Image (cartoon, rainbow, N blue to C red; front, side, top):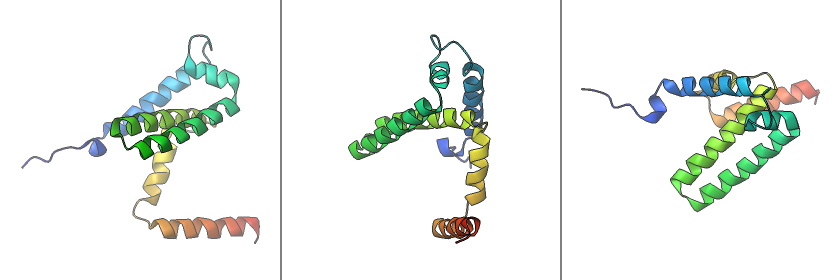
Length: 125
């Protein structure tokens, strides 16, 4: 019996993010007139953050419309711009994937409570 592989199960997902991160790194110091990535990095962190906000709003609107290809496209745009923010802070998709793996199997409510408790300890409250 052969197990059918779904897109969620493919090992290439991490590879795709790593390849995209490498492209971002290779372009971020390029010519802003020739590269969208370079243009956003040239405009600074606020430009990247503004794009993330815009894309997040577009994800919400696409989800409200309920059109699957539109949702996928908008989430892809959001992920891309989040990857620019990661790069701007010296981080890689692997850092986010490691955090998601760390949280795997944890109750979302327990995770939230633990983070809230840790924040209170750090704040001294």
